[in-house]
Length: 463
Image 1 (cartoon, helix red, strand yellow):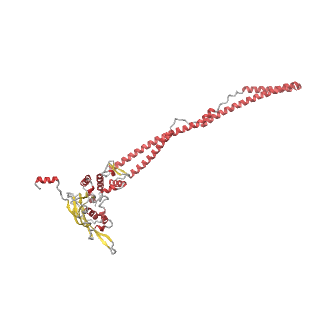
Image 2 (image 1 turned 90 degrees about the vertical axis):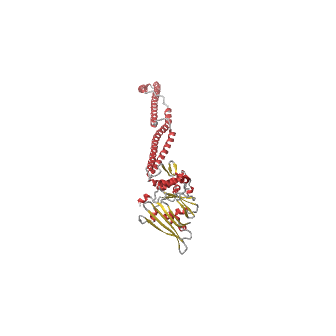
C-alpha cells in the first residue's frame, strides 16, 4: 500500500447513471492531470464531480437524505469510478437506493463493490483514507481560523515549535516583568536624584551635647564652691566683729575669745588657701549650635537615605537593564531557532512565520492579505502537500477565477503532476475540457484549432 501511496492515484474513468439530472454519462479521463469541467448552469457539472466523491465517500457525501440524488422516477443511482496509476487500478462501484418502509418513511440504502488489480480485499476504510481535508475544496484553507492554519502548516512541515513557543512566551513574560521593574526604577531614580550625602550619627551629637552639659555642671560646681568659701569668710569676719565687741565687755573671757579668734583665723587661712587653689569659673557654653545640628540632622539623614536609595536603585537599574537586554537576545535566538526549524522543514514555503492573530505569514505578508490568486496557489499547494493517496483536487466556481488564478491552478497541476478538476461555466471545447449539456457529455478533450493551427493548415493546403 505504501508504494501505491507514494506513486499516487488519479481518477482514470467515471460512469454515472440516474444521478440527479444525469441519465447516463461515461468519461475516460485519458490520464489527464488538469481537467476543466464546463457547461451552462444546470448542465450537471457539479453532479459529475459529486459522482466521483460520492463513489469514494459514500452516501454521506450527499447528506442525510442521500436518496434524493436519485434521478426522478428511478429507484437507484449508480456510480463507477476507476482510480489508479500505471501499476494499479481500483474500480469502485457504488449504488444509492431509495427504501420506503410500511409507514411510508423513506431511507437511503445502497451497495459497495471494489475491485483491485493487486487482488486486495478493500472496503470503506480504505476509501476513507484516499482523500484529504482539502481534496474537495483547496480554498477551504483560506477560511480556516488563524490557529487552525498554523496547525495545518506545522503538521505538513513536521514542525513542532511547542517548546520554542513556550520558551519564547516565558522569556517574553520575563522580559515584560523586567522592563516593568526597569521603568519603576527609572521613576524612582528620577525622584531620588540628589547630591551625595553621608548620614549623621545622632548618638555622636547627643554625646557631644552631654559633654557640654557635663562641662557646664562642673563650672556650676566650681562657682558654688567659691560662693561657699566667700560666704564662709564673710561669716567668720562677722564672728570676729562680734568677738571684738564682746572683748570690751568681757575682758574676763578674753582668753577664751582669743582662742576662738585664733581658731577662726586658722579657718580663714584654710578657706583662703582653698579659694586660691580653686579654678575661676568660665562662661557658660551655648546650646544653640548643637541644637541646630540636632534639628538639621534629620534633614541631612533624609538626604543621606535618599542618596543611599538612589545608589541602590541605580545599581538595580543597571542589573535590570542588563537582564532585559539578555532576555531580548534570548528572544532573538528563539526566533532564529524557529526560522531555522522552518527552513529545515518539509514545507514548500520557507520564508514563513506564524502569528496566532493573523495566521501564517509568507514573505512578510499575512496570508489573509494575499491576492485571490496567491490564496489559490497556496491553498492548492497545501492541498497537494497533504499527500492523500488519491491525488485529486476539485475547485468549484472556476468561472469566478481571474485569468491569473486559472493559470496558477493549471501550472500547479502540470508542475506537480497532480490531478485538478475545475468547474467552469461555458461550452467552449478544448484539449483539457469536458463539456456537458443537459446531463450529457457533448465534448471530451476535443482539440480546438487556434489561429496558429488554422494558419498552419491553410499553408499546408488542408483547409
